Image (cartoon, rainbow, N blue to C red; front, side, top):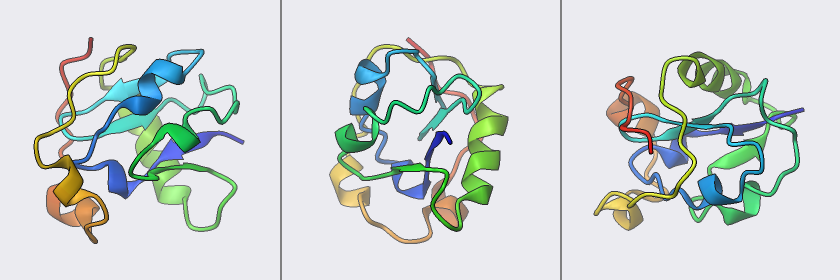
Length: 112
């Protein structure tokens, strides 16, 4: 099992999860974070820290595409170990439907 970041992180990107991760397995895209599944130790400390409830265990049904997305982009985006500033409209974007199709960016973040 591993944890994956799902669509509600897109344009929310609160980053509370980053500072509690004991193995630094988060990677930063322009408008979301992902977890490297091969680095994740399945400790679960990140899941309750996410205000957007965007982190889920990959054992839940229907998360195969998110496991693929996390795997792909964790190999391309920079590692992030320090919590940064969430986007100004993060609260407004929390819970918006269809974010993957409407807002996802494959561009890397800045990393810290």
